[in-house]
Length: 103
Image 1 (cartoon, rainbow, N blue to C red):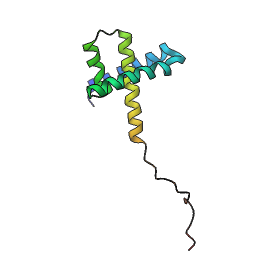
Image 2: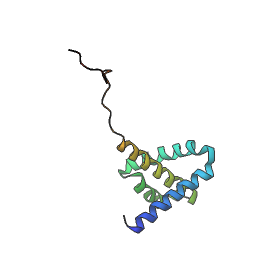
Image 3: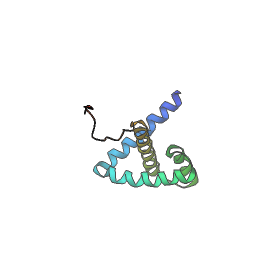
Image 4: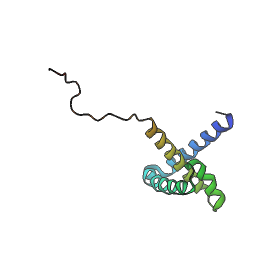
């Protein structure tokens, strides 16, 4: 990772953390709305949520607060995808685990 990319990631997390501090107990509900909207836009553009944020900002007049929420949503969606891709698929449990065949 280049230093520029690391700085960008750090800034994205700082914006997400700022959104958490500002929203407090309402963060989960607010970020859910932003995640849903961003995921839908990113899918329609056929890009990742992170790629969609600057595209949205260039195409629409958005405030600094809206950039913060979009960035927070991009971080959350990216983390969600990373967690899902790292969860091993479990084999179905047929109830025979730990049971020896006595034939």
